[in-house]
Amino acid sequence: MAKFKIVVSDPKTGKSKSVEVEGARAAPLIGRKIGDTIDGTIIGMPGVRLIITGGSDKDGFPMRPDVHGGVKTRILLSDGPGFMPKDKGERRRKIVRGNMITEDTLQINMKILEGGKEAA
Picture 1 (cartoon, helix red, strand yellow):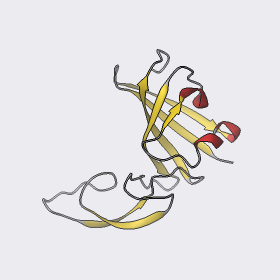
Picture 2: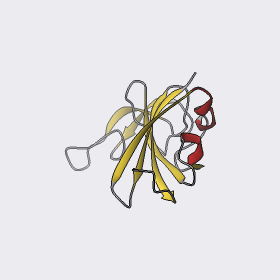
Picture 3: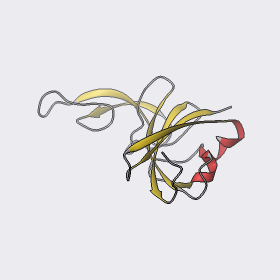
Picture 4: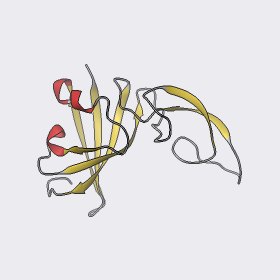
C-alpha cells in the first residue's frame, strides 16, 4: 500500500504542516499530477482546496512538471527542480521523476489555494 508524507504550505501565513497518509486515504492521490487541484478532505483538512506543487520519490529524486508520467529518467537540465547550476549556461544530465504520483512517491508538496484556518 502507498504511504505519503504530505507537506501543505499556507502562502498567507508562510507556515507549513506535515501530514502522513496511507492505505485507503492515499489511494485517491495516485495518478494525480503536478498542478492538479484536490479537495482537502482527502488529507483531513475539510473546506480547503489544495494544488499539488511537487514532491520526491523514495530515493530522493525530485518530481518535475515537464516530465510526463511517473517514470524515473535521466534528462539534460539547465535549471529548475533537480539541478542548481553553479556557472552560467551550465547543463548537466540528472535523474528526475515524472509529474505523476505513483506508489514510489514518498513526499508530496501542496499549497493551499482557498479556505481553511486549520492549515498551519
